[in-house]
Length: 426
Image 1 (cartoon, rainbow, N blue to C red):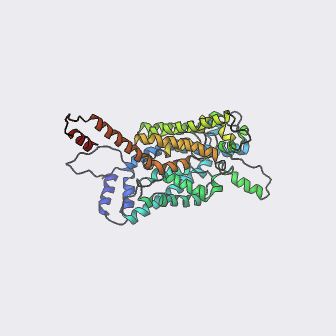
Image 2 (cartoon, rainbow, N blue to C red):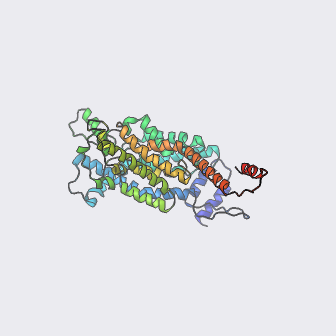
Image 3 (cartoon, one colour):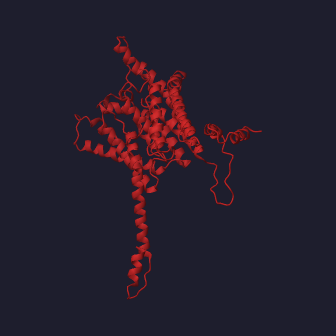
C-alpha cells in the first residue's frame, strides 16, 4: 500500500475528530486530495489547486532567498574589511563564510516566520473546525525577506501573530482579508519598533552590536550599514560607491531579500509565464514609479528645488534607478500582485498598479526619516482596490447599456409606441 493510500485511510478513520484539520493539512501538503466531484455536472479539470499555486510562488522566491544568504555575509565582511577592489563572484561572494552568516541569520527568520504563522493557522483551524488554509505558505516566505537581517526573533514572532490574527483571521481567513498579511506584519514592526526597522545600523549583520560595543567604551571601528536610499535621504549621494551593476544584481545592503533586482525580475517573468501573477499590475506599477521619478527629476532640472533642500538627494536621483534600489521591485512583483488584496478587474489592475508605483516613489522622497514607501503604498491601494473595481464595473455596465440603447431598432409609428419602448429599454 502506498503512503498516499495509507494517509487517505487514516483521514477517513479520523474524519470528524478535533484534530482532523491539522492531519488533513499534512496529508494534502504533498499529495492531491483523493476525492472526485459527483457525476452529472460540468467541471473544470485541472491539476492545479491553492497549495500548488502557493508552491509556485515559493519556487520564484527561492533564488532570492539563496542570494540573500550569501549577500548577508558579503555585506558583513565588506563593512568590516572594506569592499574588494577587484570583485570576483566566486572568490568574494559565493563563499562558505558568506553563506554561513546567511545560515545563522536568515534561516532562523524563515523558521520563526513559518513556525509561528502556521501554528496560529493550525490553532484557528482546529478551533473553528475548518481545513487549514494554505495562504500562509507564501506569507511565511515573504516576511523574512522584507525585514532587516538583525530583526530579533521574538519581535518577528509577535509581529507574525499580529499579522495573521488581525490582518487575516478576523476577516474570515484566506481569501477574505483586505490587507496583504506580509505587509501587515511589516507595518506592525515599523510602527511598533521603528528603531529596529530604519537607520544605518539594522541592514548589515553586526552593525548594531558594534555600535553598542563602542558606546560601552570599546576601541573598535564602527560598521555603517546605510542603504542607498538612506544616503540619498541625507543628501550624501556623492559618498556612495555602489555602481549601477551593484544595484541591479543586488550587491548592496537592504532588507534580506529586496536587493537583487535581477533575480526579482526573473521571478516576475516566471510568475507571469505560469499565469500566477498579473502582468498588468507589474507593468503599470513600473510605469507609475517611472512617471513619479521623472516628475521629480524635472522639478530639480527646472531649479525649483536646490541642493540645500532636504529633498534634493532623492528628487535628483535618476528616475529609472528607483526600480533597482530599495524594496520597490520586490513589492511590485511579489506583493502588489496578491490576487486576494489586489484589484480583480483587468482595467482596475492598471489603475491599481500605477498608483502603487506612483505613491511609492512619492513617499520615498517626502519621508526622509524612512526613505522607503512601497509597503505603505501597497497597503493603501489594498484599501482602495474594491473601490477601483466598483467604478470599473459601473463604467462597463453604463457602456453596455448605451450600446444596447443605440443598437435597438424602434418601430416607426406616430402613436408613441416607440417612445414607450425606448423608455423601457433604458
